[in-house]
Image (cartoon, rainbow, N blue to C red; front, side, top):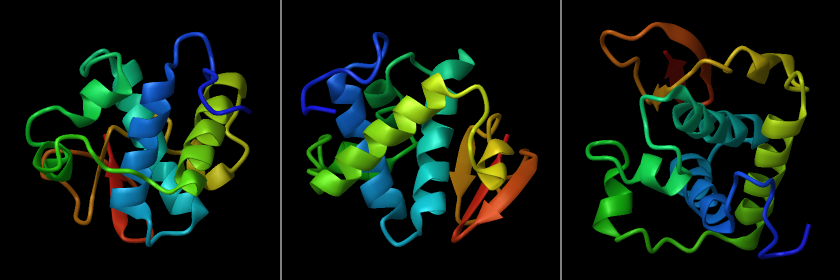
Length: 133
């Protein structure tokens, strides 16, 4: 996929970069499954109807990702994270089933943190993150 080319009609290139920022800042110390799980959770928020329908607006929500506000959204993720974000988005929107059983359990996760967030239902723990709904 060429840089600047949309992943899909409803995903804009700036959203790919924002998703790459989340993957880089929140999960760069995780393996590929952990990075993908974090990305999927953000996409799930976008699709939930409870959050904005733009990935960048999802991560800019108050009290969600403090680093985004602190840095004014100016995090430049390495190209490998932009490429990973594009792959995650392509897979998420074009596959009928997520090709990894571990990740397929996260299709309803809209929260992740290093601990379970009170009042949420834990779905899984991958690496250093607890995923819940």
